[in-house]
Length: 186
View (cartoon, rainbow, N blue to C red):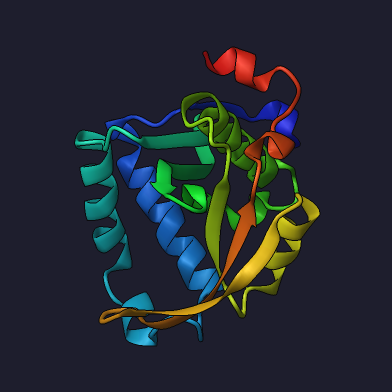
């Protein structure tokens, strides 16, 4: 499967369970040692399901959630919040791809979709996200797409533990957008 076989569409409430399962699996595969084991080994699917049901049932006015699917199976998703930060612009809050679907262009396609949406709806055009400092694969992925490491922070969460993260940013999200993609968004 390559990105040509994947269909992008707006997420619907019926996708909450599939998104939650993919999200929990992604965190368990990727963040072991970066988040507390008790959190990752707990009822993570139910915790994520609560988050995604809320986001899909009562979306924030500046929220985008898009799924990538192939043969009715969610292969990945992106969630973004437009104009989230005065300096950095729109936040890509989540970008996850199934483990067996990585390196097939799905993450790139989802990030470009979020960037196109941000460019059209929040013309300041900045885009940013947080990456765990120990997640070298994600850092290389964002750097290949022109993201710049803008510094480190420690973000505390009682359940998950201290997250040591880098902010990756694009000062102009148009650099991520495929030609003509913004026209399709309007």
